[in-house]
Image 1 (cartoon, rainbow, N blue to C red):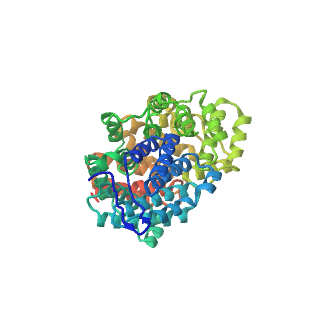
Image 2: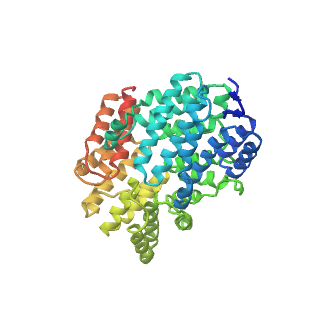
Image 3: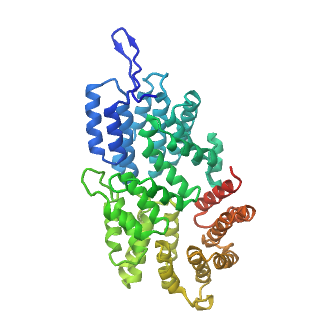
Amino acid sequence: MPLAFLFIAFTPGFAQKKFDFNNNCQKAYKEIIWLKLKSGQEILDNEKKTNPDNLIPYFLENYIDFFILFFNQDPAEYKIRKERGENRVQLMKSGPASSPLYLFTRSVIQFQWAAVHIKFAGNWDAAWEFRRSFINGKENLEKFPQFSPAIMLNSAMQVAAGTIPSGYKWLSNLLGIKGTIKQGMGGLEKFIEQNDSWAQLFRDEAIFYYLYLKFYIENKKEEVFTFISQQQLDIKNNHLFTYLAANLAVNDQQAAYAQRILEQRNMSADYLKTPVWDLEMGYAKIDHLEPDAAIYLERFINEFKGKFYVKDILQKLSWFYYLQGNAEKAKDYRNQILKKGSLDTEADKTAFKDAKTNRWPNVLLLKARLLNDGGYHKEALQILEGKSSSDFSLSEDKLELAYRLGRIYDDLGRKDEAIAAYLTTIKLGQQRKEYFAARAALQIGYIYEKRSDKPTAIAYFEKVIDMKDHDYKNSLDQKAKAGIARCKNE
């Protein structure tokens, strides 16, 4: 199927709007996807002058708004740009309904604004935008089943809809949104493997969805990094892939790899300027207890205009100075947790709750936690080696010791020792507010899933969901629900 859709209907003195994804628009799209937004906008401006009836430049401008708002979360920018989404949706309706781009462009715009609204605490707006996108995407796929980008978008939404945590299930039922992980991931794989011109054009975007969902929903983390390596993704010049690889590396206990990715990225001023690079570098460095970690985290806090993860970063800074022995700065950052940021993420909620207790973590447990989070498992184990619950006076520290040992043994491949420590964690913590017991049950589920003992895995995933009123409840339930779906091959 050719990329240029020239649907022109002539009426007296009037040329109908059209969807013409021509070479100029394709170049602009690639620049934008690589986060070279300025050059992408310049191409679109020229296209609008030479081809004024073409709707694709306006569609692609939504990508620019999306990336700016998603990464930088500046409320002033949001105020300026937030009306543009609906205006573009209405503009897309002026194109020919006979084109597969008629519904596709609207669905993408709505999907992107659903993600943006979440960043600005507009959860209801996000839910309704997602519903509109879901309906338009589904209808488009039914009308144009051979139009491969419709498969890409619909598949990503299928996975997202299939993993809505129980805490939000009432909302998905109200909105009439249903999906399955298996069907969605299968659709994304099918799209990436296709060779038609549309699949080639949207491949980078599809890979971004695919790898994030494979990492967080399918829990196939090794496959994600194998894909990045084998497919030779350009994580140096394509900044969307740079962010993808660095962010997932930080969240996969690969702090050293994340640092290399960030240090080797193309530093040209042509790319979107965003403090997110300092965020990821700060996380990677503090997870190795490096003395310059605070430089990056403080620079992020000073430049970032949004509210997501602000409390979490402030907590990391308070820990940094606490471990440095600088009680004054540690206390100052802890006080800021109570005043700045939002409670929109579970990490921020936990940081806020911890700050209100006015209790500082045990130094040994905190160091072991950070090192383990960074992938420095042997160093983390050395800190806790020879320690037992009798070395800790507080019940919450005894609980955390069991959990930390479980995670470290797990990450070192000592699975039976990990299970024993996790079971102790569940016994000590299943009636407490900390997330340790629920996460321990989740990890046991993962171990048995990899051992192909699906019934035992499901039993532990269900145990996660059964535990009530603890930190990270929704995200852990979502992971457990995805695990059950995988084990049932749903």
